[in-house]
Image (cartoon, rainbow over all chains, first blue to last red; front, top):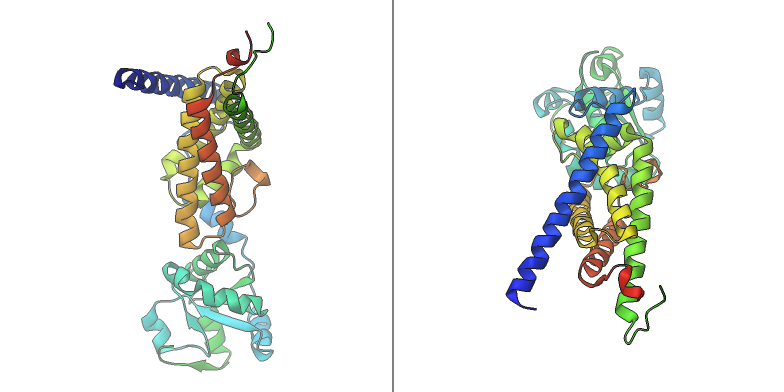
Length: 167
Length: 149
């Protein structure tokens, strides 16, 4: 194949790519604008979606969590920062901040296969960290996750076992 | 119009089979995504690769692009361009898959709309195979006219 022939073929290929792309773009925009409940072309909100996904994560009550703890079927995941964790946490809890979930995924999957339930918690009824960690775990294929809302305060006030320091 | 008498028919016939296979895959994938663009937008978001403003645009454009590629491949008009686009798409899908498999995310592939399984390494093999098929079609396909005199 001569150099001229090759460049001609390349040119015609790129021209065809532009034609196919232009047709698809035209039809996509026109057809989308004709639908009554059309998709806003630049209006996707990941914040709203995350909120919606996090709202679907099941929560657990303090008594249910304590019951699972007594049966040794639960792994508590403290989603607060490491300093708060060191000052005090539910006994045997693991400290996993939402951004660090990927570092623990393999170990947690092994535990999940052994039948453990994961309960994430942080402090305060509005604290988003427990839901964020739970959401990150679910995204990585760990389905048995529940959220104990305001978990640390509830657990501490109930006088259930706690410990201090790193783990 | 009658069927042409081939001296060495293997490559053109194989290219034809590849072209039609690609077309069927794109047609099915495109239509499945067109049925529910909202779900497809969520699938794109789950890959965590595009900014928010690009997600809906891609969710609206990509299904139609797949359908137009399929029509081009079936009708053998702009075949080389369609096959080149197909190869680029499969390369993009494979890259997105690899990044998220490395991240350890367990998300829906979104490859065929709602009827897609979660991503795994076999999907990468599939994408790479389809990429190779696209390149083969781009180089060797002769269109419908070649088969008739």
